[in-house]
Amino acid sequence: MIEIIPAIDILDGKCVRLSQGDYGQKKVYNEDPLEVAKMFEAHGIHRLHLVDLDGAKANRIINYKTLERIASRTSLLIDFGGGLKSDADLEIAFDNGAEMVTGGSIAVRNPEVFSRWIQTYGAKRIILGADCRDRKIAVSGWTEETGEALLPFIGKWRQQGIIKVICTDIEKDGMLAGPNIELYREIQDKDPETYLIASGGVSCIADVERLNEASIPGVIIGKAIYEGKITLKELVQFIEKED
Image (tube, rainbow, N blue to C red; front, top):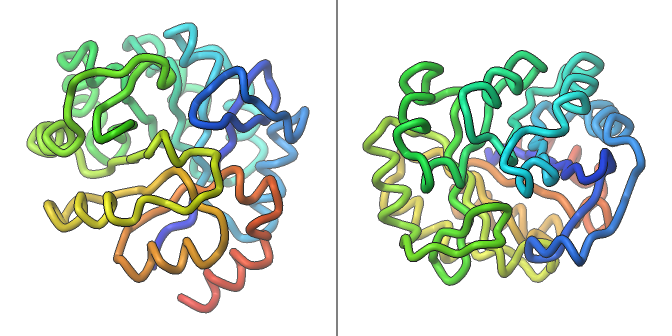
């Protein structure tokens, strides 16, 4: 069954969502991300995708205190991303309760460091962030596009030992227009052993069901929950049905 992973994006200490990664198109949903995390936990959610948007812009971890509050006051398994660029950033994330971390820009800009993280902490704790626009990798909080093609990028890091990959279709993200299932299926078909986590565009529970039917291992859901397009009750029913 597909793994359900709600997202909390943090900007200025608040729970927000952006549209297509545009910091100018932000909407605040809650002043306290901990309240949101506790709500997820109360509905049987076990995983959380926590993104430090301030850190993504600053190129260093910023919202580690929010990470620590959520990790210490819930039982959620947290994967943390945004601005992790150095060994010190990584240590801060793990010391403050992250179970896993996601690295995207670092895998492009400083592959030697990212490779060392994989070797040091193991592939279970290091997730590759493969954020793309028009099948090209984008970095630095999606503000900068590279010429690196998506599928070879994933393939290269799979050879380095990466198992889990979060692939965000930036053009879909925050638009509630449905996920790019064709793209995710192509990635999965190319390497069925990849633990692919789809991100971007999920708009209703039917989208989750379609991803599940396509045998995609995981899905990150953000704006659809916050806008009430998918209720937590629906997610609970989906999980119970599939179990």
